[in-house]
Image (cartoon, rainbow, N blue to C red; front, side, top):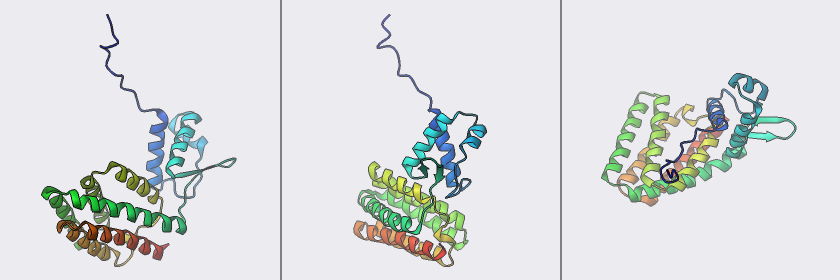
Length: 221
């Protein structure tokens, strides 16, 4: 029997180092491993019941993502963002997300615009309740919806990579007095531009929104 054509493709298991990287990534985002802290490889291998090989491979992945810094002869340290890093990262994110909402506005159909409108109504509700955690969660969904409407996978990947690094910051602008209402006003202008099918204005408003977020963080840094 010829099995060359009959055999299905094998489904491979996720490599161990990728599972370790995901677990460490989540701990970094939760600040269980805070910015600036050193990775205790011996403790982690004991905790996870693994050898140092998959752990070190996992750390290489996280280093490539910018989440940790490998320091020869010293070990591995969770990346700590400085003011200069934020000053460089936020304009990049503003450009990327500005282009994203531009493409989303061009491509969105009535159903897409309705989805944006519905998410914004939830943001309005969270703001009325002064529910910062709820506002933050819906805000993330809002930005993801824009990315989905844009349909540009390369752009989305760059946005997600940049946002991943920004999760290292200890601060969030919404905790500043008055920032929640400012953010809501900025969202209103973005949504209005999308619903009026004005991609250039939507792009400008998104860029301004993200840069205002950076300015707010500077006040609590």
